[in-house]
Length: 374
Ligand SMILES: *Cc1c(COP(=O)(O)O)cnc(C)c1O
Image 1 (cartoon, rainbow, N blue to C red):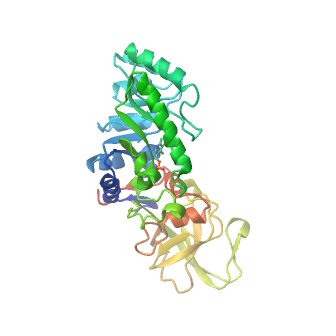
Image 2: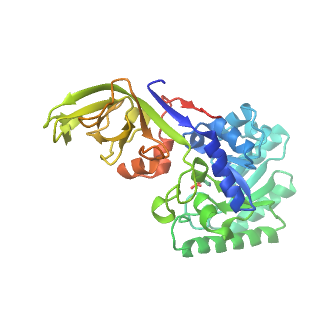
Image 3: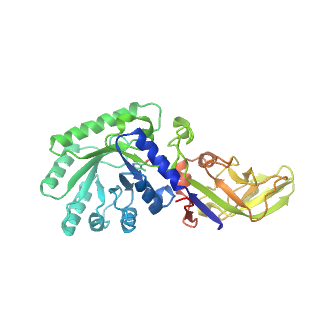
């Protein structure tokens, strides 16, 4: 094994996809943005499609184009295209685009004319997230869209929105968003545009709110076997999700240190009693969060070894304990699904005061992704 690897279990990806397919009659869109949440864009997308994902979705256009270049043919949406992107290549590659401004609509129409193809678009409506999507003046926007449709400038394939609080137990804000969504859809239909696809659910909504399914659910964090919110929805295990990523590194050095030793930059941790420490070959340049407390660490020689002191750029130190049998050169598991006793992604997230989404997406490009069973 090299210095550090992220092992991704594609059978877990398939399991997690099937879990949502079994729950919902809607089509499933596998969200593979951000390098498939750090798990590797192409292998994950291919595994998701092989397991029955109807759609793929990314934020960035270059991710969508990379999927097409790798021969992935599934219906695909890229929903974050600022002005000035290579929309002609997108349209030629049969990539659906999302529209939430008149400026982008014009660019898409022009690119479609240049490509001699009618672009496929999904209209994004802001129903309360207050991020992307058309918020006010929906009727005016729809009137412009209707004109563009009549001129064969675009084909409206979908209407979509995004929840702000789908992971919260109180459903009242979600219900408000759904009500607004239905009203916007009614206006669209009254202008003669009846999109084939209507979608709003993310993973949290897909797990908790059947009314949100419409005809596509966008399955993101759940695809990777992680809970959208461990506090409100429970752990991966409770949800029967299988975390797909296992992060491994090596012990660069094992040595004894005496009580009172101060560890790492700033000497922020002091060793209470004589112990053995292990130097782990990953650091914040690889995506290990620098501000992590000692409720995370690594699993080595059959035991948990908690973090000691600050994470450095390329390495961090763990407390192996005086009795540890760990040796220089041993492999360590930084996180995994927890089944062998290792720390989980959720434990790392909690120790670093962040969410599991950030732990997996921040694993950097220096760390090879490997697919042992795929
Ligand atoms: C990231 C994203 C999702 C997936 O969200 P999860 O919480 O990971 O399921 C769905 N839709 C859009 C528009 C997104 O950007």
